[in-house]
Image (cartoon, rainbow, N blue to C red; front, top):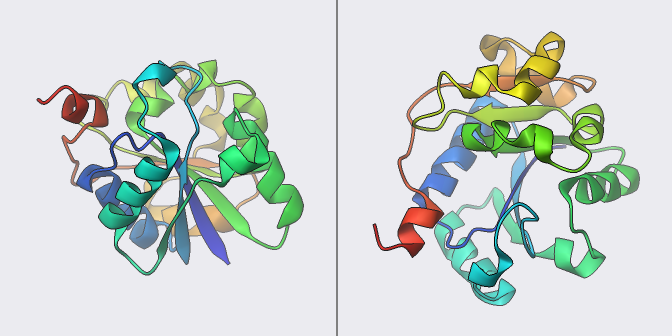
Length: 186
């Protein structure tokens, strides 16, 4: 089984999240993608978060696809950081090929994530292009540090089966939707 892990606050979830997910399902040859609705991003203000149950329900309505599962299990396991979630899943399901999925905007700050080296060492990573990040994200600090593990885009369908560290950058149609802008009424 090949499962993509797409984490975020989904505050609110929107069609841009669904677009990234459908792109990843197709281009990475994944069986499923789990939307991991986080209890809170340590790099963002938690005071702006809608309640977890509301975000999960709204995300499920937006996802609306048989191969997308929405879960808030990080709260139940007490995970504050992505590395804890990845460690939890890979230790309990060594038979599953997990892939971490992130937008190009997240790659720009990935080097600031607690344990980003551990994340890259445990699961392959797929970075999906976002408007405004096409040129800057592939040159981000984490991208430079992991340059030797970059998989050519035309081999993205093999990413889930590769031994980490391995990552790819996927170009294609992009969505301008942003949860921050939606919350601000833009």
